[in-house]
Each structure stands twice: as structure tokens, then as C-alpha cells.
Length: 196
Image (cartoon, rainbow, N blue to C red; front, side, top):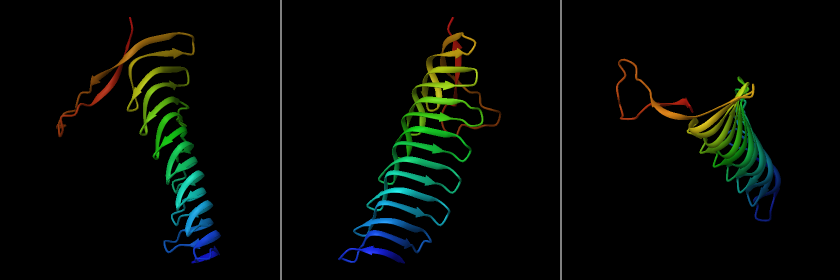
């Protein structure tokens, strides 16, 4: 069901409201039968997107409210979070920074609501990776990260004014009794070794 403007070919064109068979609704701009321009799309599951569209896809600036209570506000390209944006997770954590194809990618800041800790640095395909700083209540770690873990040389800086230099070394993790090796993969945990 559609109520709105049409062009001479009978296509949805201009402003209009649509009630879709899925139960979703769209109120906004159309161009040659496709959502293009500004609009609000309400999903039957409670999700809602308000922002730019280009050829039926989220594009430009927009805000998406997810059913779990999380929210993304920022750039969209071809229906993907892409560019710069802020995501507030259902648990209260936040990420502000760069996105690429729906993943945190580039430079960004992630704040953990429960602890107040903050990761400021590089991201690759959604994982903490590259040069970064992990800031805690009374100390911070400056160094490199890979797959969310610190790796290699770095330093801890404590609020009382001292520093500790060292490096994170990958150490093999012991498996518990009765655990079988399904694959020859190593479980590793980085271990801090202070410089002498």
C-alpha cells in the first residue's frame, strides 16, 4: 500500500508513505520507484532507520536503532556502516571512529562502560590491531595489538609517575585434563615480560 507522489511513468517519485507486505513501513523520498533521499524505515521487529537512501540502500548520514537497544549514528555506503560513526552497544559500551563494510576498521575509540577502560587506536576488520593505547583507571598501556591482544614491545605508564617497559610474548596455554586436540591449533595468551 502506497500513498504519495508519482512521476509520469507511474513510479513512486517524490514524497510518499509505504506499508510493505512484511509489516515494515517507509515514510520518505523516492526517485524512479526506489527509496532515494531522506526517509524513515520502521521494521516490524522494532528496528528503525532514519537518514539517507540511494537506490533503496542506506547511504549518507543516518541513525539506526536496533531491536536490542543498540544504536549506530554515522556514515552509510551501500547499506553498510562505512566511513565515520558512533555505535552505542546494548551493554552501554561505545565505539567512535572509522568503519569499513560494517566493521570497525581504521582509527577508533572503544569505551568499556563497566570498567571505564578505553582502547584508543587501530582496528582491522572489527578487531583491535596496530598501534594503540589501552587506558585504565590508574594506568595505561602503550604498544601494539593483534586480534585484540597486546603483542611485542610496549610500556605501562602508571598515574603515580613511573613507567615499566617490556614486551608481550606469546606463551602456550596448558589444556585441561580430558581435552582433546580436534585441530593442531595452539591456544596462546600473551604474557608480559618487563625489561631488565
